[in-house]
Length: 310
Image 1: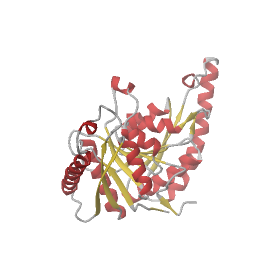
Image 2: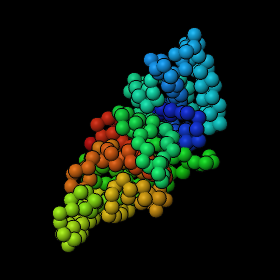
Image 3: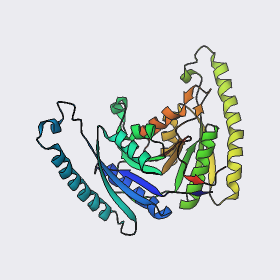
Image 4: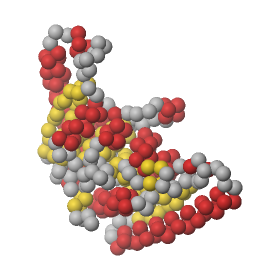
């Protein structure tokens, strides 16, 4: 098996998180010989009376000027990222809103991966729903790598990968992708399974002993499955280990990644956790929102990064 990345798309709003995403995309493009496209989206809602373009005489001229400025800024961004050895294409598009425009561009231009910045949310801001990054994660047909904002530029170091496992075929596939990435970057893997207590899943009509015994049995079964998942990895050069914790997956995954000092979480956007009630897709979006490190969200029914997978 090998990773195939021919075209990487980096949407940018010229923020710190977008600049960091560009640095990560440059590292990937250099590693895999991929073409790098940097996209700036201008959102126009001409049908709305509050849209400034509805009140100018020549909106096409305004768009042209915005495109010129955007392409100039992209050129400066790429120059700062030292991309002289890469195949580059600056792109400007306008649309009703950024996320659908990004998703459409990726679908129509054979993009293998979208790499984009996200600011994340902590404290009371966790109650705010939705962001461009989360919408792209939810809607894109290709893998999406979200990169956390940083106050100062950070070197791109990938040494520790965390792989949440729910023992579905989707998480098994994600493990295969993560293992190949880890091999290419010399990183170590930590597999994680989260056992969600019955009470936190809304099942509260059981006594304490029943809930505790159920959790113990789930952890024992998970340990056996984890050992089986790690066994094929022992023959490779990638160092791997596993961890089993109790809690809510969307909270436990970022917490363990921070404890592990992880650089990347690799997670599928579909699958099931616990008793099969909770779609991992919603978990993936919340992990993107909470995580302190980069998150690679894979699409089991979309484009794959791995050639030669069974």
